[in-house]
Image (tube, rainbow, N blue to C red):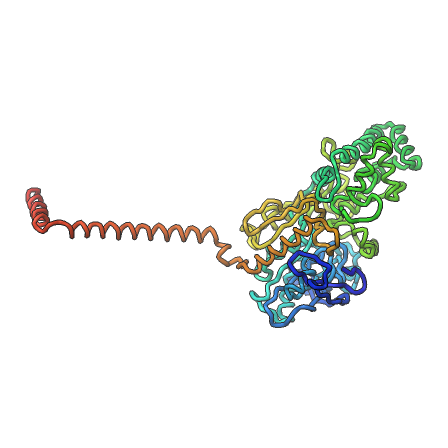
Length: 575
């Protein structure tokens, strides 16, 4: 599939399959869609606020036939990478939908998330991002109401028929959270959703992220290429560093200097705690897990290639292997990798997607919108704690490191962060996703997750009901199935794409309305049972009456008369 200039959309011979044969595919060259704009409320929860702004969106109507009963696909934007016209053609978060358009004759939209589109200041909810209250309209709840407003407007603009042209929301990571929540909170507008790798259970302290990362490096099958020996080698190398950095915190400077010398760092590079955290808290090299790409071509760019170095004993001890890994990755000095690692749920741009990285780098001058949302709604603070399974240096990056920034930058205390997280889980339901009433389980949302993705520890892995099915993709990283298809993709990823389309097809045939028969499943069962009991009682009564009449009919007339005379005599005696 072409990834620059003109994009190629393929018609699938079978859902989820990919073939280069021209007999099974027809191609349409699709130029990058231009941005269009929808007038959006600045604050959906304040009727006195009449301010509006222009929200960017993109359309792919190549295969759409007005007046048809085809579905409508909406790719929900999030924190990164920023949406552009490729989102409806060759999408990071929604390509399962984009590649399906020719088969379904569907109309597809992509809607940019408020604030994350502020790289285009004409499409920003506020005019002055330096204002102390500039971020006050940034939240997932506002974003969900943006989706509802947009869907309502597009129904009118494209003369869509509610109930006939069924909307399906798509997204991966934070956009996956929003895709699922938009369906759950607005079932009157959105029929179904695919919420890929969506960590919907907010949490303050998240040591599970790095614990799961260690597990990912022990997985050998499904194209991952890890091993327990690799995991243990990474840990052993960092344990050597850990012992010396913790000794430095206790005043033994010479131990820290030993690390500086071994890693060829200038003297004094690891004096302060922030310097120690930057160097080793998330690993002294790059250790892809959520962004693991088995097809990457750069040196040491995935789990298999990292483990190839870390398990090679001929290189020396585990510390020397870490040094070799840094050399292979082109790392020298101290990199501040951990900041991006916890601020963004989006996977790092794949090594083949260099243009996406440039887009991300262009955002560096903007406020850190995602950091604000972690303080205001989600937490997700990834700590490497003593006694945990974390492979890296334990005990230097704790919860206070993250929450101090919330207070310093946004005036949000750790108590408020915890309260905000509780409010988020209460509103959305956490691992038991709820509908508009915040009590009843929602319906018609599919929750796929990848095995090596650390974010899966905060997603829906067990189906809360048959109407909220899940999918666990062996060996897969963070919503890796939503990326454009490539020759050589993991078989589990290919299977996941097929399974997702099958599930969406099932949803499209299903009554997903909250007032439908499935929503009142319990009440319906009770009514059926009561009706059955009443019918059974009636049948028993009829059977007894018929049996009695049959017995009367079989008695001889003289015996019947004698029985009646006997009863009459007995009656006189008792008087």
